[in-house]
Amino acid sequence: NAGVTQTPKFQVLKTGQSMTLQCAQDMNHNSMYWYRQDPGMGLRLIYYSASEGTTDKGEVPNGYNVSRLNKREFSLRLESAAPSQTSVYFCASSEAEVPGQYFGPGTRLTVT
Amino acid sequence: KQEVTQIPAALSVPEGENLVLNCSFTDSAIYNLQWFRQDPGKGLTSLLLIQSSQREQTSGRLNASLDKSSGRSTLYIAASQPGDSATYLCAPPGFGNEKLTFGTGTRLTIIP
Image (tube, each protein chain N blue to C red):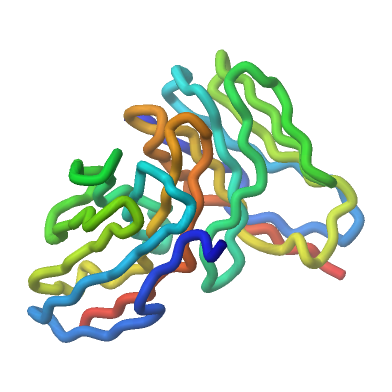
């Protein structure tokens, strides 16, 4: 099992450009999450999806959209990137009946 | 809103010492708490998950305890090794019992 995979690993954008971060898991988990990690701030939840077809906002959703394409895949879209969105983005998944989240390797995004 | 504090923010100890990392949280109505390790530039690796019905959980040289009533968890590392150098994060659930809230971590350096 690959666990949780994320693409791309690194990305540089100019202000105003758009992009989609991809996440996939092969553990048949119902729940998936997007976090961002900034120095001195810890990880903060952007959006989550409790099941296929549902999404909800987390702590810092502004400037982002998500799509739960199917049970395996959960994408994060930046429609108009801003320098404040420079961060490391982590995707995670979990199953409600089995506590514990599993994280992907992260995407390091720089917006200039 | 769940808030998590980890003390100390950084710790350097000689190889072979036993050490304790502390985590405190404000909302004690949790079902579990997860400890993670993060190496520089990498994703999060789950170390231990303690259910609220447990007081301790052990994995090799690691032992985590949970005291819900006082809002505290500790991670004990026995006989530290240079390979233990990393940032350690604790994460109780935030709102709902799946979405995690993270502290800013303790950056541990083991000196050979």
